[in-house]
Image: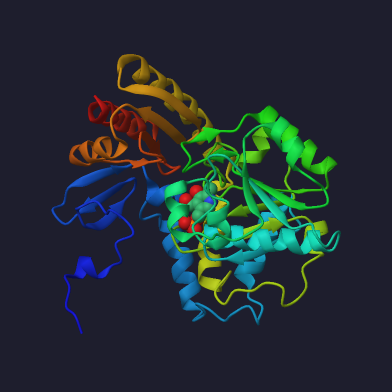
Length: 390
Ligand SMILES: Cc1ncc(COP(=O)(O)O)c(C=O)c1O
């Protein structure tokens, strides 16, 4: 038996910031010394409602009062069914499969796509992802993630998954209806540097995938659920997918993901084709019902849209003033700022100033504030950001 300090007992897959967080309130987190941090990370696009949302606590307490945290998917429970109904009513989808994380949602989406495609041609199984994509770190999703440093140590990766350029001409050559089952796309690439995919490109890809009988899977794990100012990011491009994956903000910080799909795709899936012990249990689904209602509110979406426009103007102004800023990209409450310094140095300086930031690449700062953050707090954050960069 070995003895290690408590913090060292955790596998070192993250370079954690040094402070220990003990409390959250509104859009701020507090460490053991009582120091406050304005949160522009939101637990990596999870805590859309910030910290201490009373309705979220009530939803969880209500669920706990029933005594049902979990019963498995062998039995029916109401919160998951109600949530699926809301997701279907709010989207292109006819059916929903619940799981527990983003990568798990994408792995499931790949299975669904292959099951659908196999019914059409025995060789139709390939999944195509795009340059700059991040879809997760499990085997199938890692093969669809365009980050050499994440991939290299784990080769060989899952087969039948490839990365293509974000270029319709190249995709036209690649999407063979006999062999390709699906293309997976983040409408706004998150980890890959916050790249808002051109709406014309998305419309062209939708038309091409339809023409080639290839499924379009949209990964809205980071950019969906209101973060871009519409509930689903795809609404802004005027397209609908065949399959969509969501996760991060769904259950207010409890682990939850979902795969949404059309009836055509769903009809290929039979009992036993996929499964999960925990997915869609009554506690997470009760929390998720509250989150859905809050984030689907037109007033909240308008607030994200308006403040997102303001944020874009403010960040472009910052780029004009600061020679260290090379580019600014984003929409709504999801922005990337390319800086000449290492992103980790800017993040460390911001931490000292009481602002939490994360990165999206070695020289890209990523801003993902809680969606409830007010204009005044955004302004305060941008001022601190300017100090941290400058
Ligand atoms: C677009 C996208 N897809 C998939 C994932 C993987 O989600 P998870 O970390 O919950 O497995 C992420 C996480 O950052 C993501 O941003």
